[in-house]
Image (cartoon, rainbow over all chains, first blue to last red; front, top):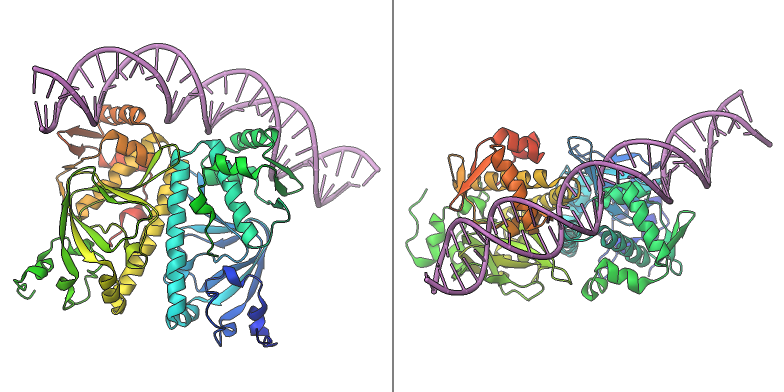
Length: 248
Length: 248
DNA sequence: CGAAGTCTTGAACAGAATCAACTACGGTGG
DNA sequence: CCACCGTAGTTGATTCTGTTCAAGACTTCG
């Protein structure tokens, strides 16, 4: 690896999140000029609105640190959380090709975002077939995940859904090297879990208690520990094929 | 409109489903040579497997006539129907860019499919920016729909879900000119509705009875009639914005 | 006509929601 | 330092929505 350009815009060269960003195919060379696309970063507190459904977006965001979530509200105030965003995730790849999104995004913890010019980034990517191909790949993975979530909500019990969510987060955090042993930071409140899985917070509390008394997981000071990964996996209904997903 | 080329491969030129196919942007000219991509058609009976999850696909399919559905099975046999496919729908746009899919597809009624060579079609499209753009647009619409389904399953009651499904099918069939007055062919069995909405067939029966006795819909001989569109729409929770979707 | 698939209905049950009270915790301010 | 507050989590009692099981009626079709 060549020594990084020490100028400010090229701090991206050392970004540890590279493998999780759309622009890092892993197999393609450092594209010159990428650093100049990054306009800077933005720091927001927990609960801050990152994006509001249907608003015109000039920027493209990437989550550098902290957790966020995508969600929709329906008429009477009920909320559905569509997915959780972890460090390295883009708010949405769709912003590469569209100027507005059909969901809102909120910071779950304090977050720091990398900001790119949406159009400049889109132009940069469109001119590089390897990046376009990667974007297509990531988009079709998003579609597959969306269908998995539908299946989870439609056909799994509360216990299964929660086990599933925990395992998924565990795997994603593991790829990001944010798991120590079997423990990881877990900033979700129970109402987040409820809104993501189509349950109520009270019921989430009871199910988590079951999982704890069955010795599958434990939690303390915003950390979650998995004690019986095998059982949790079995309960979650995640198959072998799903586990072997290598792609970042 | 120029007179259609009478040779066999160019029967596509007169296809009434054009506005619903990926390759019809509406605003782009008749691309020469398109007809040659179509390899022919295939007729299958109801319940036939059109595609099995994860199998390598050499062909790209389009539904010319009849209904089909995308679904996933989970370990213990539970089934989740992900969406219904209507005449003019592609089995999946993803086949343009990938050679396998994460779900299965089954014929719901007798169907007739148009068959294209997957790779030849992909090459054809990749060489035409207008088609690539259209494909991107359709893909992001798929993502938006997937999130809507998640929201529906996670946060809506059985009555709302069923009203929602009926309205969605009504609107899609209307675009295809397959609604006469307020009635349309409705080949779904109650267990299809159940598997699509995360319910049981028995409960679907009860809810439909409610809708019937409330005078919202009626059905006879595989046709469904909407009597109170306003109420049904209200119940479905579909907003004004969603209704004004013009794109085919 | 018979048979298989579909729909309906009832009765009993279960999973999850709702309502409500109580605990624990981490600020914040007096 | 403690009283106070808001947020989060727990627990129990109760209700409700949707499931399960089972039987009977109705269609469709070979």
